[in-house]
Length: 369
Length: 263
Image (cartoon, rainbow over all chains, first blue to last red; front, top):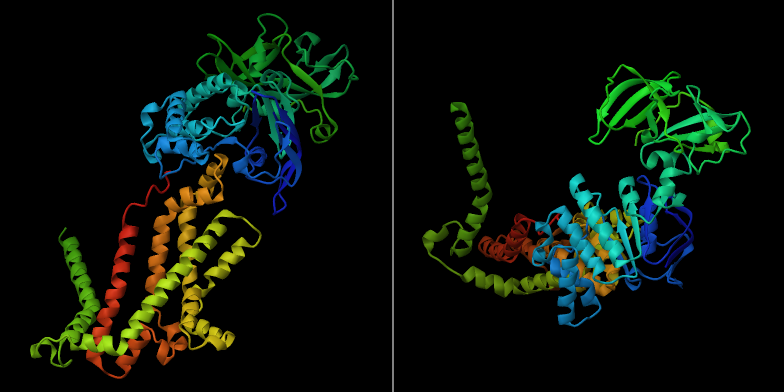
């Protein structure tokens, strides 16, 4: 079990990289730290690895305080974005490196290296030099090199970021199966929300050094803590609305009924007139089909394979993205009638600071992540 | 086509002229060193007497020069390697400043360094250690620079972090990961230091005494006393000392850099 207690990191130039971060991972859990570049996620990982010292706070691994333990004593596996393979050693020698440090007998090393290469499905590359490998192969070697040590904790720092899209998907799926099969406690750092949602048992979203939200992928997707998370995780139209009577929400161009809201939304206590933030995922918009909907003026239609994405604006000028499946008999320039999927929309009260610089404004634009 | 090939021809001729211009003195020195009398050349016969004379009169300078150069290389090997490693590895406060300071002797004339040394350490003047110190001060930046660029281009710090995560302590990391990847920079730096030390004149001229004379200073003396045949033979011996390390450096930098950028 890994535990971070109120970890802070301030660099010598005064930059605050990590702010008061507390976090604990249970055994066998894959925890993904997700955030834009510069949010402090990699620094957090490096602190856990022992490559950076926290300015304050403690790191505990299986109950032991490892805060000031040098990295080589921690038995924490590390995989970098740029692989960091030893260029003068073959694949097998790279994987054997840590076992040699442990002075295992030659026979034992050979056997475990072979097993590790088998595990990442590159046994045929054993005698190759790193410079002759593709990016995906290099990352498999790096993974084997870390896993062969049977580390108490595995740290992965954007392991797929340097690979092209198809290979990234492939390796992500393999990684997911492998890590779950080995039940190895993993801290995974990425800026890619698809990776985070697909791989993590839990996801922690970071912004400017702070953990903004921690939860299962479903929780984070359905109930984003704020507009930042909503936009970062999946695609979201984030609008500001105003409470009306009977737990209805006035969006200007239409009114959200209580039945549209998802279970996580709790607006019962909000007084009429209060500002709320409304998170509408593109897939939560549906054709009105005769029911009462709102007018949507389509500006662009994109074919995404399994669905169409419509970009358009409402009567108040608010820009929305809507994902609709199947064939459509509409074209750009046409008005359509849209409604909301029942039980899908997440609404929360706008907190003080958000309200101040984003007063109710029905024309706020949306971000398509 | 016509004008282009014409230009190329002119270029070739110019290049040949430059080469002749550069090599003529060397060829003349070689001829002179084997000639019984400088102004007559080899027409008068062939002799090795000047070489023997050099070894008799200046033999000690050759030995001392080699001794200083080798010790200088060894000191740089230890200090320069560690300094280069420390600068590449640790981002401590003032690292950039220290790097600048270490590279400063590159810009300061040898005479200035020599005079500063004489004023600072008057007691050891007259010992060859004095020249050695001067050479170390003067060559140290070259060694550090060579190590630094080698370590940075290979992102060695990153490799070392990977090695640490695999349980390797400092010594294991240094010997198994760092050194095998920087040997090229290391040898290059050593050859550079050796070449500079052997040929260094400015500093040495001020720091030598008749008893601790180095080769370039002796060479100057032999020319100054107009013993041209001896000076020629002396020059050739000087070349023979330096050329192997120059060739080795050329060879090292010419080959495809070992795995560079493919970490």
